[in-house]
Amino acid sequence: MQPVLLCELTARGVPSSLDDDAIRDWFHLGREWIVRGFADLTHERVQEEIWKRKKV
Image 1 (cartoon, one colour):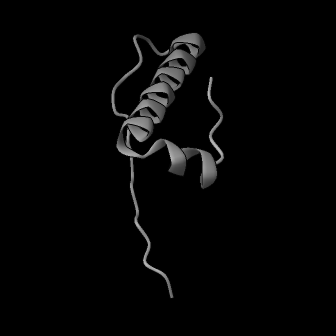
Image 2: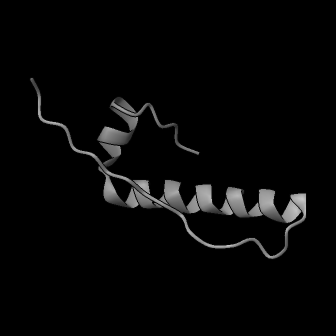
C-alpha cells in the first residue's frame, strides 16, 4: 500500500464552429493547456523520471 496523489486537469470551452477543423483545433489547444498546467504543477524531476516526459 502506497499513498497516491491524483491530479485531474480539465480543459473546458467550445470550438469556434462545429466544422471538423475547428473542433480538432480546440482539442489541440485544450491538450496544450493541460500539458502546460501539468508542467507548472509538478517538479521537472517527476515529469522526467516518473512520467517520462521529454523536453521539447
